[in-house]
Image (tube, rainbow, N blue to C red; front, side, top):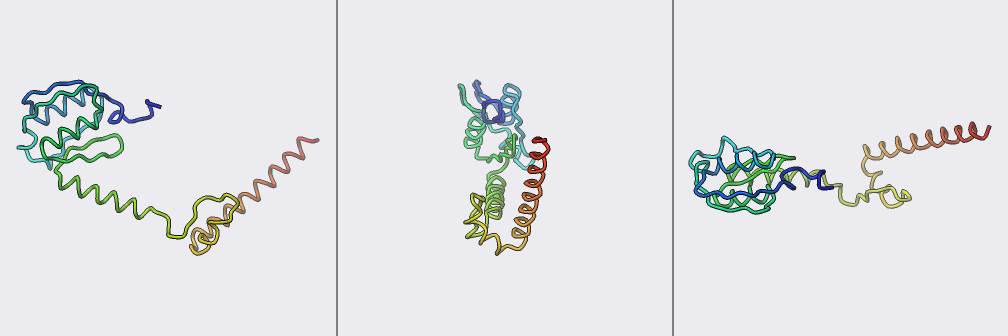
Length: 158
């Protein structure tokens, strides 16, 4: 199970930084852990060169990077297995975009997912023409498969 987690979740940082520029600390963490970390070109040079002093002991990569970002007043964007260090404004805008995408993916109000007995969700599905057509296709496929299974059973009995 641990191997299924991306390195930014399972990699551990054991490092001490004394007045080390942020970008160098990020590079050292990436090299030591194998995690994919990037510093955005949008981040001003002054922030990239901000000295940080911190000691991490068995700290997950994600937590270490977020701590460094908090110390230097920048933000972090997590995308798949990548942590991008960027401006706080860009990180906040990305978080807002991601929240909107998640909201847009939510099923319509009244939609009951799942087909346990086909009872609850079908009425709501019928209200959505494209979903109703999909349900009909699935029913047809199910019937076709049932007939094939019956035919195979007959052949096995012979």
